[in-house]
Length: 114
Length: 112
Image 1: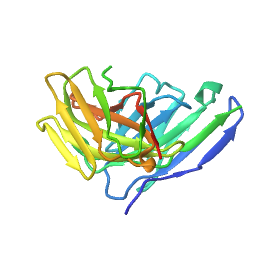
Image 2: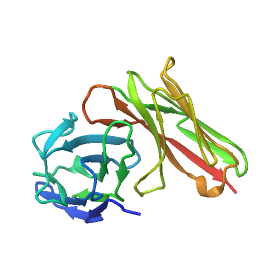
Image 3: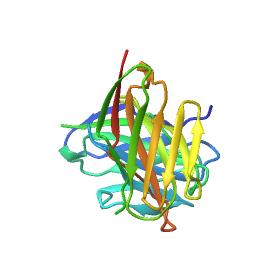
Image 4: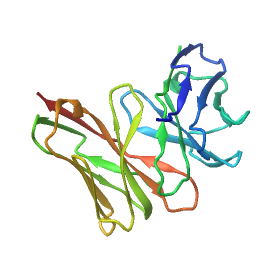
């Protein structure tokens, strides 16, 4: 079964450094998402992306964050100047359509900012 | 912003018993989905119910949706120890944008 893949699975970074989290969505999907989950807390929506542009973003997704689809297969989340509170599991997801369609999640990238 | 909120926050049952988890939301939705998450893992889609549906089954799962009360329930029948996980409801806001919002989840523990 096709799946969403994410790399790295775990990254430790110094506060203030830039981090890029990578995702390969399912190949025929058109909608892409990033979510994050701070340890023990709920899954929070960050951003959705369609047709090479951001569709929706949450209050969390401020100027520190950016997303890009640099080629036909990858979807990246960049976090500039990481803060301690950015430590979380970041999930990439994709769906073929949006409304009424299953969203498939990757296994996540665990980011630790020290 | 709209959120699905589950209750109870945590549920502990014996293997073989049924587990019922509830979800409430605030605004109109296109559909509601239930996901499962094993500790430290990704989210696995369980079932989707559309706003014009009232009940849906999938194996040991039964989901109901009451749009008048803005609530949904997930019933797992004949639970197994392997069902131990967190369960989240997720709703698509009916705004024309692409935004699926997750609730806080119910942590289910099934004792063997």
